[in-house]
Image (tube, rainbow over all chains, first blue to last red; front, side, top):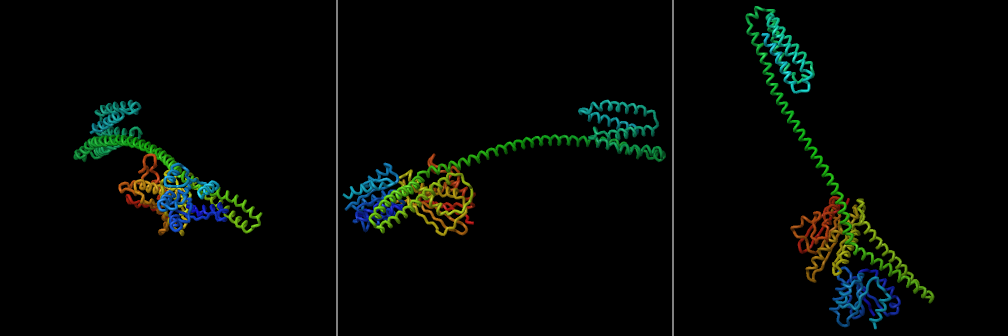
Length: 125
Length: 434
């Protein structure tokens, strides 16, 4: 399962790699990273068939996570990737906006990785 | 002839009496003057029965004696010119009488030439008297006028010094009000920043928590690997843990820097110039301003473009003050693009651009936005204190005027504004780099 993580903070990358150490070693998961919405889109252009799940931050300079989400929903209908939004602002406005634009789930920072792993399992099944 | 000398003496006393009449000196002299008057009259009557030359001498001596005496009295100092006016008469009288005694034939023959000048000298006294009276009058008037003017000047001076005191008091009050305003403007901008700061601190804190958590997990895994005997993997994990600890420290310092920056912003400026890297300062405040606005308006988004000159030398400045200037320019830029975004279509991409560069002997910071721009008719007002286009309660109107003071008066730099209404604005700050 290939997961694309979109966040403008570069340190998110080692964090995910270490958190999913076992899963990566066993081949359960594979990670790709993008530092911006634009980068994520260009990555998806040639690899969207591989990517099963997208985890995206909302607050990013340039294209926001919400914008990225709606672009993805418009461009990739089949198979629709699972998109989870992550944000530091866990308010209703943000959540509603994410859900309206077609997000599958909504998580708040700091990320609870145990919860994330559980959710991943349900989506994979 | 003797008649003239006695008359002159009599009139002299009359004049003195008149001059003293309304003075406090009058009681002191009254008796003496009366006695003198009667003395003269009696002497005059006595003189009728005397020889011509003798009574002339008597008259002259009387006049001379009076003048000599009066001249010595301090109380009659002001009558000096009148006394002098009697001298020609005395001289003429003496010449007249002497000639009469010594050369009586000669005198008999030319007595007209002697008598007429004597009579003229007598009238001369009254001529002098009239002029001196006129002069006295003029003197009195001018003295009065001077006193009047002096009183007026004193009054004006008192009024002016009262006004000066009032103004000084006002200036003092204004200064303290200004200080309070500066402080409250700082606090207002700090309020705007709080959300940005919270966001900025939250991020590194999340990393600190996440990395320490994952490190604990990793250490458990490492123990497992060691028990299995896989030292290679254990080493790899140890390297990761070490890397994580570095990251924890890095993010800890990041949060530390933000808190320090915030404290520095709220603190009263030390006014101390320090060698400062303006790239770091600009970057920090750009993010704070952005997240500050983001926290209030979550739908807001903008492109932040930075062109920092890597070779930019550090410049001497008061970092808190220049930080406030930058914060103000960024806040304004974000406000402008936010306003435009509300009106413009989805194609509009709000962009705020910061560039730094060296221009001659100055360091230049350019803050550019593609927001609403500044209308031509208010361009020359934007640096004025209390001028704001924001709705009441949202802006103090002090941001740019304070920025101007800080840059131009505090640092000897300049602020240049280029703006096209509807297209965006550009603020260029030049700070001398000495």
